[in-house]
Length: 148
Image 1 (spheres, one colour):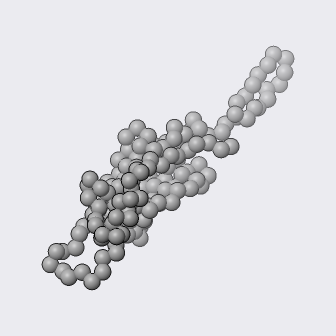
Image 2 (cartoon, one colour):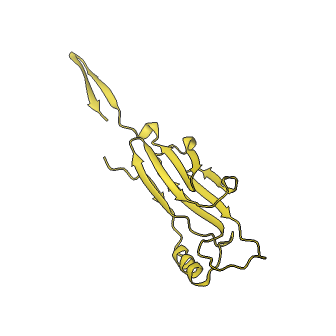
Image 3 (cartoon, one colour):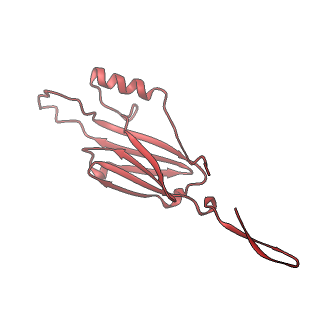
């Protein structure tokens, strides 16, 4: 059974911002957050989403859920301006990503963990979206189960 489960909200300017950051070495700001790479998959009755956030202090990670929208924000602070940079390839500043969850996911019971630079969200499938059996009765016949 294929069900629309998760839709990622995209920003048409995000790729342009990423390319600009690579060319000019600019950091993300609250007005123009940097991209955080992500993988998402279904494992049974759980959807798993992993975000790459290496070098981010776990205390800087902000995870909000409003209705069916999950917003992840994190920050990797800028280096001390007194240091002389020889290379600056790792983006710094604010990172942000939004996910729009389908109605078949349980946004009330999201579990989050951060380990080795990876933020992992585990989002259960809502009970109302799981397959179930319904008993059907009929006069003069035995009960039979019908898959729903």
